[in-house]
Image (tube, rainbow, N blue to C red; front, side, top):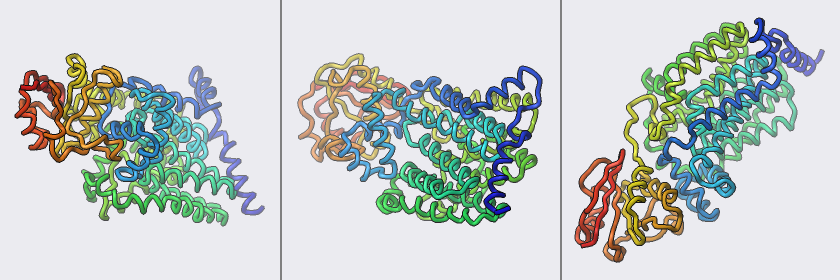
Length: 523
């Protein structure tokens, strides 16, 4: 028998092995339900992920990263491309996709987040199919359900950023690789390389998954000695090389994009935070680690593959982060949640269906509290969840409601300046004002601008050098500042403050969570 025949026979046997794919040993109703579910195993995790993603989809307010996505994606395509090249070229592909999505479905929070919900549901289907390739249908179904129940999956299914999309493409790449390892063919290697190239243009940090894939290929070659597996090297290199032009353009931007991430150390505190923030739940993280240990006890071969996918990308990014730019933050490696879910599926695949159902139910209970917290109005500002308190957030919608109740035609408005623009208070309040008052209605116009951010190709506003010359003759001016303060000029430049003091008096003040709204009246 040739090597090729051995490989095909082994792959076919794995898929038809009744101990891996057959019915669970259990009486009714569990055995019947399990048999029915396994006929289309990918569907149920995808549905569960979509349901959890849609649940209270619009309740959390947009936070500054989502507002940046909205600001860029709602611009004309030429302006979008020009601005993204200056401020965030790594996510240009996502902004373009979101632009056309908004053109079709609108820019409400529900509509914009729906793109991520669908992407994450697709990722759940890929996790299920990859788990089935790795260890059988039972393992795939259970892996998909575990993935769907991870609170971080729901959290980033409700995020107007590229994270759900990169999880989808990364899990698809893993699925394509496993299919290719079972039946190597040129077209399959090409499909894998194209998928890697797409992944680089969605989230370059996610390309670290190639290290886990390389380890998986090495393990399979050691078992089969099939030299066709060496085609992984040119396929992976071609996929990585496709990202090089963008890497050259974006390298000088990295300090501005990830400068807030500290260089990670090699200590327990760093990895403890990483695990909890990766799953957005301490209890779910602990449970999945225990299930990974169980996987090693029941199926070492499949567990070794999944562990490589889960651990090596994290180790690679940690190592790269010792250089000039650090990228070691859990949401950038959200794709590894899929690998941990596959480990859990491998561990649960050979237990009684009632035990497996009880474990899945327990995971749902463990994460239930976290699932509710991540849907609170200010939850998206809690980037370090569950570490810290996370109670402080700028209530853009609340500030907009205060202004909308008293707004008059011709009102002006001033937002933080002098280095505070990164808070995105202006875009946040403007976004919700447009929903309260309608576009082109009574919404106040922003003062002290040298020009529009779209025309100037900036994410943040550019202000006049001479505020007095840009003031105009507005009878009333709204001022929105961060925090709880009685000083309306706290977050503006000294020149802007001097002009406002000499022309206006404060007549009204109202605090909403994280923001204070002032109304100034001329003279």
